[in-house]
Amino acid sequence: MSITSGDDTQANVLYYCPCSGCMRTKDGAASIDEQLNTESPDAEPAAPVDMETQPQLAALRTWPIEKLYYCDDCSQVRCQRCVIEEPAGYHCPNCLFDVPTASVRSEKNCCARNCFECPVCTHVLAVVEAESSRGDGGQPCFVLSCAVCLWDSREIGWEFEKSTGISAQIERMRAAQPAAKEYTSLLDYWRSVQRASATANSASHSFSTTSSFKHRLTSTGLQNNTSSNPPPYTAASYRRSADKPPLSDMAISDANYVSPAGNSRNSEPQRIRLHMKLSRRCRICHHILIKPESKAQATRFKIQLMAANFLPTVTLPRALPRGRGTMLGPLNTDPLRVGVTVPVVLRFTNPLYTEVEVSVVAGRMRDTQVEVLEPQFTLPPFADLWELDDDDYDVMSTPGTPSSETARRGIVHRQGNRIAIQIQVTPQASTSCLSIPLLVKCSHMDEMADIDAPESSASRRVVSNAIWVYVSLGAVN
Image (cartoon, rainbow, N blue to C red; front, side):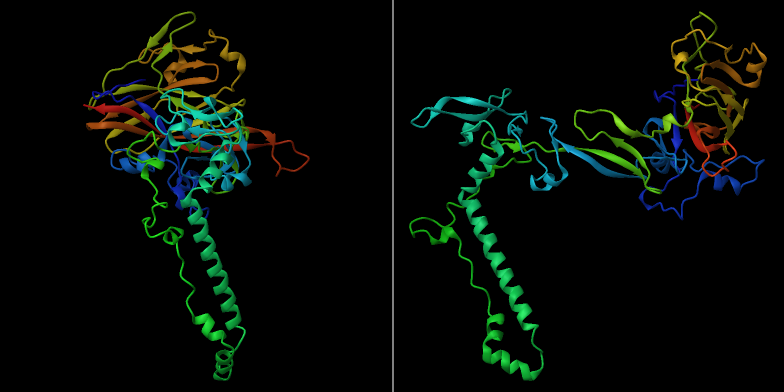
């Protein structure tokens, strides 16, 4: 059933992740099965989050199934807040060059090839041969040119001898500037001061601090040298002539750098930043959930454990097939009203190649009565041939007009690995958004044999999962 509220809020289905974000630990984690064991088996289970009274917490804990991961070691769903991200590879988004991890820091997380951004429009610059030649021999020169805004590096005085190794040529140009030379001189000065201080401290600690050795330090002159201040540093611009103002060659114009407010044609082009691919691990057991291919051109994943590939997908269908060869029959889209029972159809899809036993239990709610007509059913396994067969219908009936015994039990549609069931919802109070918590328990036989079982028996491991699903149906008038 697809219900649209008065403010055009589309109904949706969200899955609950039982994590507590980055503060979750293995000792303090409590699974849904442990929480259910503490309650009475006949009583309705209490939902972990109330969507109406705790909207902020629900926004952090509920996710679409497409954005959830599944850890097969913990048999639990994992959201984006309870995984650990690790870099799997670095590459340039322009030339798609795979950069080794050891070179990322030395290259300042930028591409070391001829990849630059235009300082005006941030478009990728191209290395072209300039029209004019440089030098007496008529050797060609190369410039960085933008094909969008027609900017080139000659506006800032950059001309290159070769078309390759542009980054190395730019570094040599910058090293020849007075500001770069002064920075190198200042860095060497402080390094010498640091080495002298370290040598003096090691020599002073080699003697005892008693009064008998203080006289020896004074006589040798070591104490005076250690206590004396280092010679002052004199900038290169102060050693100029008196006619030239100080720091005139050291002035750094703001136009040489990209300003946050806007770009200038006198700004220097910046190297393109590297991108990286991320792999994700479970925060509890450190099991790999997502591991992409390290190459930049590859779009595949070596490991991809998504929840949609392990857990049944619950959706609210807009329509259901009426019969063999007929068109889709629309479902009831009447708005929710207080005291009026409305049938809601939920469709379950099995992504596994084995049968899945499903049990659906409605959570405890204060102002809404929910009745699941078919609480237990079996989802058929997934088969590739069913995707090509459009006429494989087993049971068809529209809600409100049951036409078979299966439909009267609550199953209104069955096709391939999909089963649609019907629940009765009776709101008792008006609300802006009605969300129904459903506890979905599913179990299936693992395709691999149980390693803990004896060698004589060929039993397979039973995988059980319990997840909370929140079905939002819109406003209640």
